[in-house]
Length: 415
Image: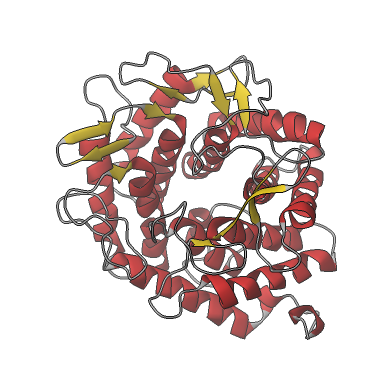
């Protein structure tokens, strides 16, 4: 018997399901809050058992530092004790260690001796904007300074107005690295720009988010039946042959990003007062394509990547597409005409998470499974990230009309 055959009431309205989601969020907070803090600054990546992967002077990636600030700002808004200390820890490290006091911008990777990878990457800077916006939502004293700083850097160094998107990366002195443009950094910047708009009211952020979505989704993905292309040249011409970092720039197309964009486009449509009629249609198409082409109908879970003939190429099942699918299904359920497909998908996704991705022995989530849903560590070495899973657990508990920091604050932390 499938979950879809139990009852047609949306799971997100059922008290037991809501309690279950809150319990999963609490478990994630417990797993990371008391294990990930590096007393020498920044945060540890954790192994499967929740111990530091590298106890002695590990490399700290900027996206991980910024995501911890964002997630524990959410915890602070929920009233979870101790989150303020983690926000302080993360914001101080971003400002004093990741920030380049000589040339401006933020280093991609640092350790106790300084920058390990001093490049300035759009992906990392997008998460600094998210961290600063989330910290502002809780009134952190460094938030305004960091928000002004990262906004100026994005505007003067990364933004390419002729395209309506950002450049990808630079050397430390801001000389260009290669003629590459990527959708992943621009997708996460869209998320961060919406958060910045929500805490400042400055529509410049929202306009930039809308321009990115128009380029990446309406025009680029729309021309490919809403399969999101990942890699482009400097003129935003699709490069189907690109081969890069398999964690941040996997080849082919990544159904998890189609799902992420599905939710972000709907959120952008709502923040933009529903004036862009193409956005809800795109959100639906992105979700349907991801479930139709990316979901493994035999074993469950999403294939990591597909080639341009829609054949799975990397068959690992990662946790973050599952998380983004849960959030997208909820947003679609809330804002588009009733369709059992969204609710049935929501249930299928969460049941697969519960059965295969939750680590019932050690806590936290398995970040990578094999094609047959066994824990693996070929791409992701352990449990380094609370961000995707925490948001997946909390999004269905609050109104689907903005960033979690916005909706949690508006509800006074009540769900």
